[in-house]
Length: 348
Image (cartoon, rainbow, N blue to C red; front, side, top):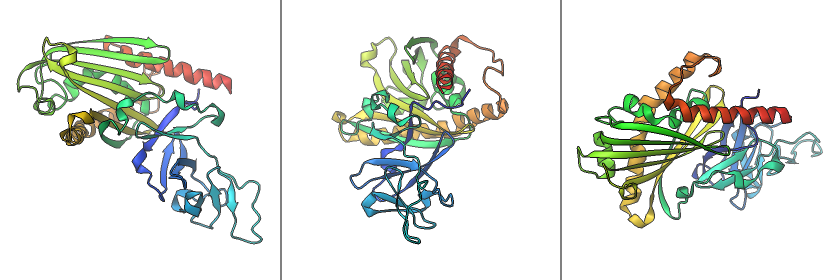
């Protein structure tokens, strides 16, 4: 079975990572990609390897107002369709095989989405919905990091948020744990994990972030939507114990994992606050996402990387894991992913 789904959208980067006149190198699903914007500002993506001497095109430069990428080694230029348009050597004839792969890419929800499969199947309607990443209506605090582990382990981590009480006791977990329950549901190929925690005492960071009274008993709702292969929307809400969810502090988040290889993952995450709350919300969104970076970097990242090393290349199922009721959402998502991978493999 193949390792990666092809006919899905992967996050290639935040939209503002690719500025006009610049080239950005990325590796996705073991394939090297160069991202750039054309003369109209539209994002483009090509295979990052000149077919002449295999030099990375990302080490070259944009020419013709962004309509071509020039190889930095011998000057061949490639258009946005991937075809060589200029050969500065000899009589200038362009070899038939002087072509690089062109990837469909869409800018949506402040992100660049890349299609790794058959270009004719690249339907933008298949991009998961994250309306709170619309910068026109929301202040967005965003960040990213690299994880030396397989991307599916990161999906497991977000789909099972019971771990916050143990892995993040002084940051995201409860100062005094409440009573939590996780429910898993599935809608087609979309998996939901819904966790409700009642009557917990929060750590200081969360009282500061929410403005709730220090030491007050609180309820917490943690709803995660998983879209294959690893795009997750987390609705994380906190309110005073016993109050309706509608009165809670509501924080939509994204946790998006893009496989670089079987052993490395790019992690894009963000949270948002509506612009109608005023200018203070912009600074608050940035503070909150920076507050997440600490526990993600010093607690989640080392744990997931240690898991990956322990698996030593073996599959999750070959490891015969002991499963608990809290594993329901992650196991369900893994089964959906396995079914989709098997379906793609049988179709080729």
